[in-house]
Length: 454
Image (tube, rainbow, N blue to C red; front, side, top):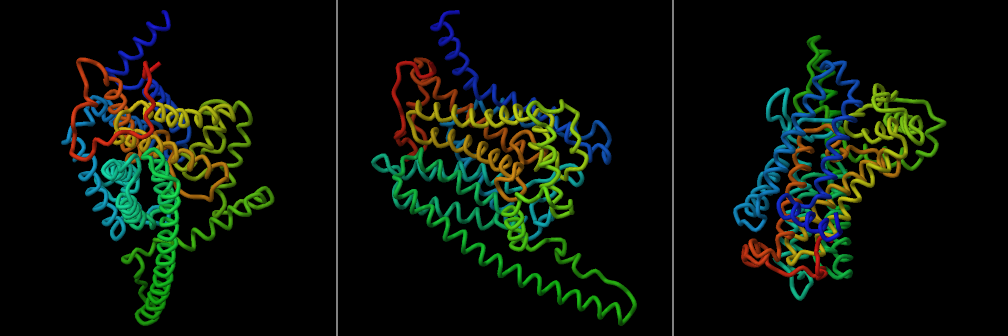
C-alpha cells in the first residue's frame, strides 16, 4: 500500500470512527485491565470466589466500552449534548459531592462514596468531578476568549470553579485537589492564556489551597475534641450502668482527621529512602510491599499471574496495581504502560493543533490531561516520588465509577477527533456549523496543514 493510500485509509477511519491512535490506546488499556486486575485480586478471590472479581471488572469495562461506542458517534456541536455534558453533569457532581461530604461512606479514613445499589454499586463523586472540571473550564475559556487570550473575567471564573470543586473534594483526598490544579494549568496553555495570567491563577490556587488546609486543620481539631468528649461520656455511662454504648459509631467515628494523615504521609515520604532499614508495620506496609513487588520484577518481570506480593500488598487491585504490573512485566512493562498514557497526551496535542475552534481543543486536551495526570500521580505514588495517597490507574485499576468516567472521557475525545477529521469534507462541514453563541472562538494554537492526519 502506497503512502497516499495509507493516508486516505487513515482519513476514512478517522472520519467514521474517530482517531485510530486513541482507539488503539484505549484497547491496549482494556487488555491490561483484564489481565492485571485479575492478577492483583488475590485478596478479593479469597472473599468472593475465583471468578467474581474478574466478572465485576468485565461488567464495568463492558459498560464503559458501550459509552465509548455511543459517544464517539455524537456530534460535539449538538447543543443538547453540550448542555447535558457541561451544566447537567456539573449539577449532578456538585450535589453528589455535597451529599458525600456529610453522609458519604467512610473508605480508608475519609468520606468518599455513596451507595447506589447496596452490595453491588457505589459512586465516588470525586472521579466525576475530574471530568466535570474539564467540561466547565472548556466552556469558561471558550466563552472568555479575547484577542486569542483569556479575559480576566474568565480567569477568575475558572479560579472560582476550581475553588468550589477543590473545597468539596479536599476531605476525600489531597491528590484529587492537586490533580484539578494540574488539569486547569494545562488547559490554560491550550486556551492561549499569557504566562503572566497562568502565574496569577497558580498563585490564587495556592492561596485558596492554604486557606482550605487551615480550615480543615481547625475542623479536625474540633472533631478530635468532640470524640474525646464522647469517649469520656461513654466511660461514665459504662461505670454507671455497666453497659457499653458506642457513641462514636453514629457520628462518623470511623472517619480519620485528614490533616494529621497528610502530615504523617509527608513525613513518611520524606524519609522513605530509609525504608530498607525499617520493620514492616501496618502504617508502612503499603510502601514496603509495593517496593518489594517492583524490586522482585526486575527488568522483564516474573510473568503474568506469578506475582508474589499481590496477596500481601493492601489495595493491590486499585491504588497499587502499577506495582503488580512492574512485578509481573518488569521495568519494560512498566515503561510501556507509562508510554501508553503519554502517547494519549501527545496524540491529543496533535488533534488540538488541527482544530479550528478552541472549545473542541480544550475538550480533547482536558480529557487527555485528566487521564494522563491521574496515571502519572498513581505511578509516582507507587514508586515513592509522591507521598502515599489513593489514586486509581485509569481504566486498569478496579473501580466502577473511575472506569465509567474514564470511558466517557475517551468517548468525548473520539467524538471531537471524528468531527475534526470530517472538517473540509464536502459532505460534512461540522466545524463550520454555528454552535451555542459565544463558543465559536478560534483556536489560538491551530497549525494549518495540507493534510491534517498525515
